[in-house]
Length: 230
Image 1: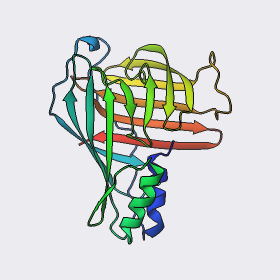
Image 2: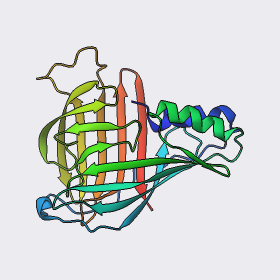
Image 3: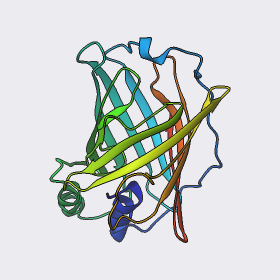
Image 4: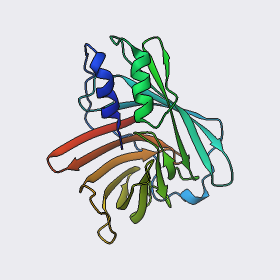
């Protein structure tokens, strides 16, 4: 799966560069596990705006998502990711390259900005069935275990049909959720690199994401990615 840092590095080929400072972990608290998340029914037509940050990436990135209720527990959150490239040239060519990398996504160019369509298909608890927020479209079965206390198993499948079986363990304290996701030791994951992903996040009264930090570790490689509501 391609991630935000990879996208930014592709764009940086034409950048003079002006690095955005990276903040330490700051997650605003939200609702906790004492709330009956299954009873929530988020409203349609609400727009959520975010700033995306990845350590070492000098490209400013924002994202907007608008909710749409399709059924009692079925929702979509569709919108766009905007990357500002003030010193870039040949943005049309960059857009074509990214479009191919992201599965022929229709990327638009406006001035010095790239606008990439993004979206989530989720349930009423903001548990994703599919998403392309941090890269290519990925499907989750039965969902991505977002804000599910204790152990939760799921399968992640990319656009090419490659599946990974994962185990997520989640706790919550004072409105801040913490999850650790690893390869499921009880499932088969042939030729899949052993990666540990930890996240710290919060959700609002409708279980929609407020802030999230994702820490990934694979061997000696470590990355940090953040989504912060504006």
